[in-house]
Length: 371
Image (cartoon, rainbow, N blue to C red; front, top):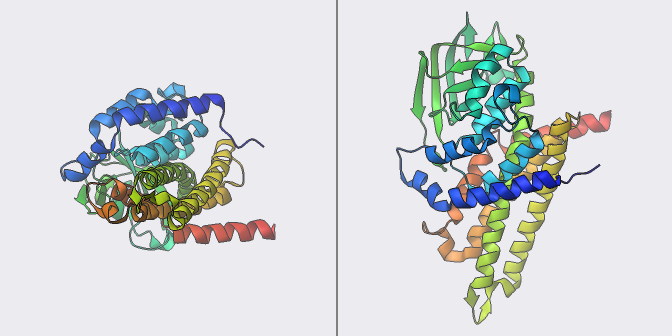
């Protein structure tokens, strides 16, 4: 079993890094952070669309590249490394995957070409209150094709054109497509730790909704969608964690104290070593998840939970220790350390917190051991 990427995929990764190093320096991230009126970088979004990345897994029949999830994984890692302030995850990991899994031919024809061209931004609106996503938590309802209820927080909900919404129809959950530009939708912006990623409360009052998939299979589809997104998000987290480690290492080698680089002191060495170990563990689990996602393996629920848990831990740890390695200067606004800390926290919650995924992981391990 080969868990490494092919030469073509490695080349794609290399080119993506070069592109983002030139088009997405941290100054672009700061520009969005410093401007309350901006929720994302529209120019970068257009440039990413021109690269074809938004259509990576979209079939050529719908104007996509027709590639696989492995190619998407390598792009995700580089986007995470660059802290790209664009709604890529919400649109590609959630909306596109939902359409590919359960969309009708008509729904795919309407939305997939627009996604590939960068003309449509998506979001996933499932959560209504704190806690794990369960059937009992879902209170939004669809009656006669009209959706009513409130979802929060919704990542990129304030800028999205279309939402994938989990709501009950006839007392059972289902997934629905909702055009947010139509009537019956109110958006309220929410403040978060990472303003470079939009968040909003979505209030639906009789908004037109189209079902995705069959009636009453909403929870199963939502679980499958979260598993797919967890693997892709893990690569973003690994990319960010690796860059945080690089920043800490570079500073430790250039900063001198008592005539020696601080990286020569045991305390700093241990910090860097711990960051490296956690990052490599997360990468290994992310590769396992990528294989399961690409091949449609039955291990995907276990692999996705493993990737999610380890990636959340690695990124949070790397971002925190990067701050500590930089010492007092690491806490200043001028340094980029806080940008990675903010994104680590945001990505750690966007598809459900680490605690919920740890419970999923335990459940999957129990099922495997009982088989």
